[in-house]
Image (cartoon, rainbow, N blue to C red):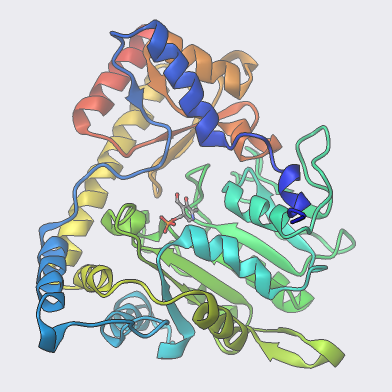
Length: 413
Ligand code: PLP
């Protein structure tokens, strides 16, 4: 008899997006003519840039010919991609990384879900609230928590609340609170669309160094930052190479949600405590994990990712991001004109709005669907502190964004 991992039973029966899908299907079944606009799931809508598909086509042709065919590649990624990442994403910003500090993967979801396994079962984990649910659920699955309490929180995790008072960017905990070994930070943030300033990240790095803690910094949306004063990498902050890992993805930066490519930076200087109190490099642990459980992202995909860094690729992907951010600007203005209180959406493709008249975020979901045929994401799905808020995504066609703004005006004035 195979006993199952009972920690899975602590997870909510239905994950956020399946529940949204269920409600939308029910609505459409009773309103078959309604044209529903989906501003819920954060998935890109623009096709891959021409320079990326050209590189992938060429790579497919290489695979079709005996002399250029490739089988398994290096687990950490091909040199051509790792070098492009080092040069463009880091050296250009004054950050010097070694090639073997970069781990190419098939997505930041896997990286952010898997990274917890190199920490002790008893490691004390902190997340922000609201939060990208993967950080929480992967720690629940690993058995680091008890069952969720009535407030939806898992005992065993520390929740750092993001709210209007702190601009949805929680500060490091003051001394005397629960001790924390590992904290997940995400900037630009999913779901709130807000972004951490250099000063805020500097306070986190100072806190991590003072407390011998590790920051897991998810920068999946860094390409959406347009203000050069804002940090796109945590390594722009002095000292972060000693205490932070960084996750980056090509999903939102270059439309790779269906292609799958990402990477994680694990600097060799970042260490944890091993048996007997010895310091152990997280880089060597992650290399062991990666080479044991992952056989590399595909050659064709990595050629596509490397094309993002060519002059054409940079220009084409920048134009896509500008397109989505114009959508975000229009949505922000439309929502403000309909008297919504809106956060985010300036350096991130997400807008975070306060639900009107204090309605619950699922009630507002149903109302928005019924009155405007717009699907968004209830803030409560991202944690208890998301209750009373709602996420809209700017990933859509211009036509749909304009239509959505018109519907909001008609439904909410
Ligand atoms: N991290 C954050 C904060 C995200 O919002 C997402 C996707 O929505 C991911 C990671 C996952 O990215 P990927 O497509 O690379 O798995």
